[in-house]
Image 1 (cartoon, rainbow, N blue to C red):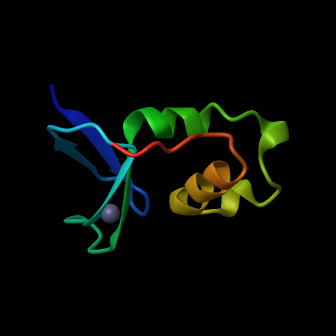
Image 2 (image 1 turned 45 degrees about the horizontal axis):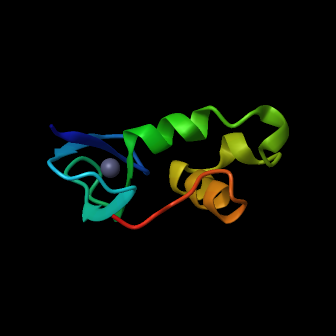
Length: 80
Ligand SMILES: [Zn+2]
């Protein structure tokens, strides 16, 4: 079963055969060498209620939102 990962910069998606929380790769779409977030985590991000979001949330990149949510314990990264 393949897993879907979403580019934190441009939201292009890639499929991989393994399941991790995020991976670092160079995006074929935007050329950025950066984070791809597992689709399920992206769904966790969008599920964060307004009151848990910092004021600047909407202006933040996906990558920043992701790191912010991890830092504040709203979503968890476990290796593998
Ligand atoms: Zn990209």
